[in-house]
Length: 357
Image (cartoon, helix red, strand yellow):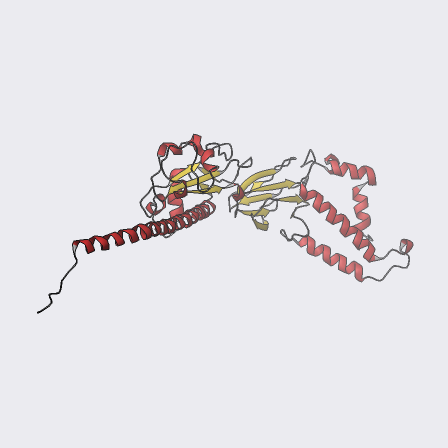
């Protein structure tokens, strides 16, 4: 007799196979979804960081902080993506751009565009945010200005306590930006009672004169702003790119920084060095008082000049600059009282037959 072979699956076998597949799917699919979501989370984290960096680049390049509605266009100008790729995630979910309602630059909110005058006061509460999610869409009402602080203070993996959003805190991404480090303080002081130093900001024209008062020019500018320091006739003496808070002093027709910084090189330093070298190369005078040598005189003079420069550039504290005569300058009057006559004292050093001659 021939044995008949069965072909195909029986119903019971089919059910068993499907049950095994369902069990495997229940074990594998959640892990796959989790891995996919994790990849989306990591990509969104990187995208938000890239967008914020592009926004900063746009701000510094254009010297402008636009209103929130202009952030996407600004970031897109520095990235190989359209503005639509900034406003929405790869999953098509909208991103939200928020600015602290208390943000103030020069006493006003956004937009802000830097001018030659800069900002009179230090910009405050310069906080911006980009908020997005990889899953459940955000609720626009939750992103109202009143909730800014609550959103800013929300730790990773949580969601703001003021929200009615039904999503998972792990899906929420918040990119925080503080623009305060983008501004630097520039202080220019005029101690010359005859001439006034001049300067330009990013090539502005005409050159501005430094006010001849105790405050001088005290403003805040964007990082990367180019300062051109000029003499009273508008001739450039030095150029400086702002990367930190800094001050300069205009005195005796020359812009000065700290001697050791080398930021403002002038012929004055070269002339001084040449004079010192010539002085040191002279033969020792047998009639020098108590055996005083040239090197000891130079040491004392260097100490004085270093101390004076550090003091003058730190934060001048006099009540009046730009006086009509030396007698009207507080420290000048003080020296005159101590030495009798500044003119005669300086002549003893640099005049005919003086110490450095």
